[in-house]
Length: 338
Ligand code: GLV
Ligand code: MG
Image (tube, helix red, strand yellow):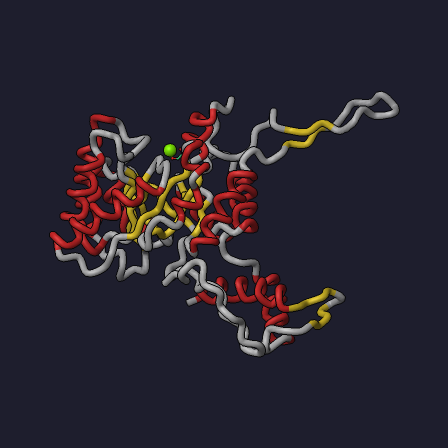
């Protein structure tokens, strides 16, 4: 599991220390389905063939008068298909901790789904105290219902207070599996002036300096979410858990979706949410390392079998640090191929 924090570990020269183990499961896309809709539930076994993770959403986007039907529908869907046998992760997003549905979501799902549930996604997490509470509640329910494996937790980072506390949230419990950015709620919490779900914004840009010839000045769009993603990825990496992009709401703009996912992948995220079947293939492709990059990474590993020293490959310097970068890439490709 995780390395205890705060202990100095001497490096063995000539035997490179293995980096953090890659995640046990490939989780390139967390595919959201609304489980109160019978016709969606009927399609779930087919959808599951194409995804790494299927998630029954009980929170936002599920109308208040359908909350109980969504919970019951999720329990039915979880028991109708053996997702584990298909190699597919089964997650749910429960309602937030201070909502009228939260307690019934957690208690009824642990009772009704049991060990079939891999991860419970918790929205609007504000600090480690939210994780401590759910950690203890799950421990009680797991004992009561005789579960054999702990249910893992995934926090959505979607309030300003949550962003302030992201490091403590990431390290709050051994159950923590990962964190996703929730840009829609976070935008509202921060009083950002946008109505978008993730992605760029045409008004957020930097204009070039005035031109000597008085001609029109060009402005380039900047990434409105970069700071938050970088902070979240660092917090997750430091705690040994995974970072995820979260949702991209402009379902029709596949090009922008792909670029957003690609930026997140480069920055260290392992996956994103897919809100529509069109986003599944994009996530699958983007969150799998590029074969050309993997081939080069393998050459680095082969050129430096003990992970130390310096070599030149195609005019580029390689050393202990690039060996580690290459190992991340090769491990990730192996895991996806497995
Ligand atoms: C997701 O839940 C978001 O608020 O963006
Ligand atoms: Mg949200």
